[in-house]
Length: 91
Image (cartoon, rainbow, N blue to C red; front, side, top):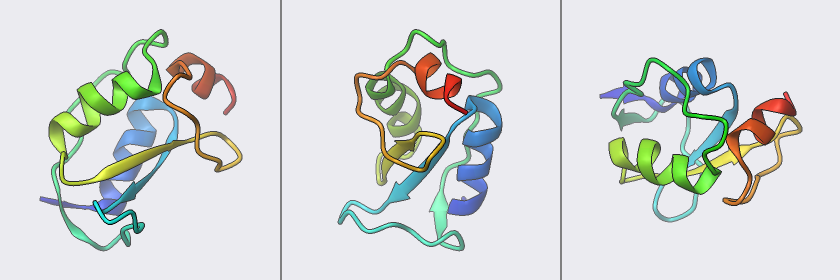
């Protein structure tokens, strides 16, 4: 198991966007919280994927015990219908 701050950094480095990780109660988890599985992917998901698909098939597949919010370059949450290419393009 890894710390939440490590998981967030790994997602940023591979996928090219920032995320916020929450417990199932909706509260943001501190970076030093341990209990996450590492992000094992080596390559970014396709730009054509939606945020909802990425959450379902990549994030929740490995860490179903958490909620995740994908953030745009201003730190605002994006909706599930955005494509990853659109999100990445804003950074």
